[in-house]
Length: 264
Image 1 (cartoon, rainbow, N blue to C red):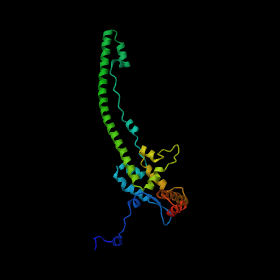
Image 2: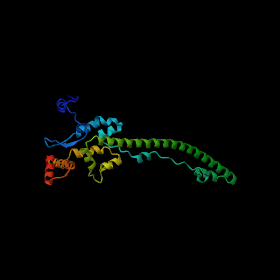
Image 3: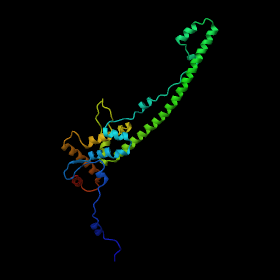
Image 4: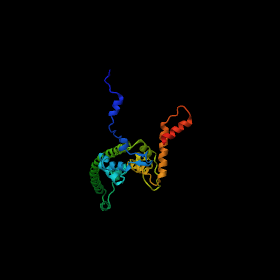
């Protein structure tokens, strides 16, 4: 009597549709050894092209310009805010007033003290009135500058947040092996060369183009011959296989043989 369920063998026989490849293998950045040819394969160029032409368009235009030109436009908060200075107000107290040479010459021509003091007071109050008018204009300009500073601070914060999100998205668009290579990579820069040397320094500086630079260095292997590249990739593969295997019981030599078989 049938229980209404199809036999497992029949289900497997007629369910041989094409299995869609995972995104991790087709779209995300990868670097791996081809099992048939034994050569290193990477989709770095296609991955970079997809970021330049499509993925970067989710972000403001300035980031697309930076990625396509390769020219960094760092966020220099101190330089931006240094251009927006709050001006000090002018002192209008009597002790800060000094007659001009022309005024001093005019006062010297007045012989009697009372008329001279009256004329000096007249000169001071005219100077003070001009100062108060200047201070009113300075105060107005400072209010405008404070508003601009607040807007710039918010703009800089938004830019830093965008860079942080962008760097996370780029790193997420990689296989774990590729991401590990970039996180471990260290640039050997000269004393006169500017730029981050590690991913952590790039995060602090907001240098998101560092990731693409590190990807080219770690995935294209400039300056290394094919044998050295294969040896490097083999060591990485051996580390991965060793991490997966667990030596629970049995002969140790047999376990090593099993490990070597898996690497092959």
